[in-house]
Image 1 (spheres, protein in one colour):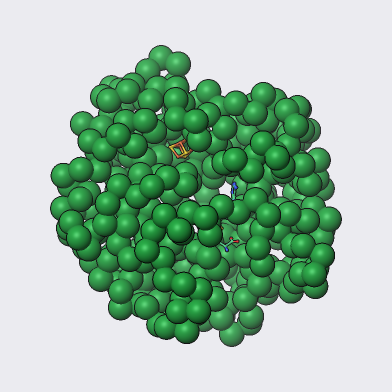
Image 2 (tube, rainbow, N blue to C red):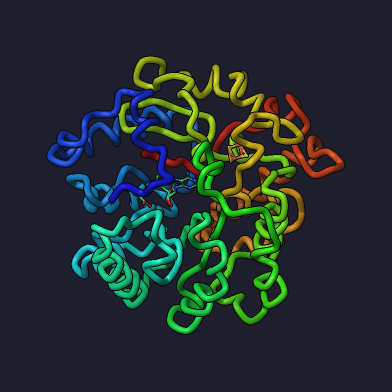
Length: 361
Ligand SMILES: C[S@@+](CC[C@H](N)C(=O)[O-])C[C@H]1O[C@@H](n2cnc3c(N)ncnc32)[C@H](O)[C@@H]1O
Ligand code: SF4
């Protein structure tokens, strides 16, 4: 697969990511554990999210998830859904604290046309079978639907499809495509998600908290983000070779490498220019101005638009420790949240270091 909106390969060139053949044939679990050991010398995080490339394509991936599930309260794997065979899904379900985050832009091949070019069309059925297998095995499933010109009009039907089959088991997180690709294939500004806001109660069994749907609907009206963001202060992005970057959702140059500087998180993370840029009261960094992500659930929680109960009902933050951590961080942020709902520049960085979750690619 090569999703037409994905920037990962270009991004990998910024770093020392091993070439694809090595990634597929070499079991690199030991390296990943060593990087996590370094990270956890200074940071405690109850949640690990794993991504790629396609994580389940890598050698040793299922075994790594099993090992990581002993270390974290919750492990979530972001996947394209192609490799969800019964054996793997059952092994993951047996662990109890492992969840899937399946990338799927709709329930039909047409809605997924930026994910599946015509020659990969057959994979659509494979992915839909994988989703079904995972839901039947009892895995908690989040779905990431990237909104583009191909699918912005199809999310209500997608929610209907999910509700009829997987109510209470799958949650649909839609958000507009990010980065330069947004200019070419982003949805036109408009009221596309308003029907979902108005009919929220009918679809609540497959939707994130109401404020999330409202926020995405608002942003789509103008395609401009105005809400501040605390993502940088609640999670960090780690790469398999030790690079650390300030936000798991932005394609920015890493701020350093843990293997070369083991006190990076402690000494430099909160004073790095990316941290300052990302933590402005209003989005200033170009990338942030059009950004929206499933992590906005945390932003909305800190801004009192999502309640404790609602965030506890999401899959990713359902663990006790994760909820306690979020409550603690919300308290810590309270003095620096400005009137219009964003973190005040510079002030928050002295208060909180990243510790809600780690995203590893
Ligand atoms: C880079 S992918 C890697 C994981 C896996 N291969 C997959 O397809 O889910 C991680 C997530 O980023 C999303 N994504 C990729 N390019 C994006 C973009 N330009 N804007 C927003 N999300 C994007 C994907 O749809 C997926 O949900
Ligand atoms: S707005 Fe988006 S890119 Fe900017 S810090 Fe938040 S999640 Fe990252």
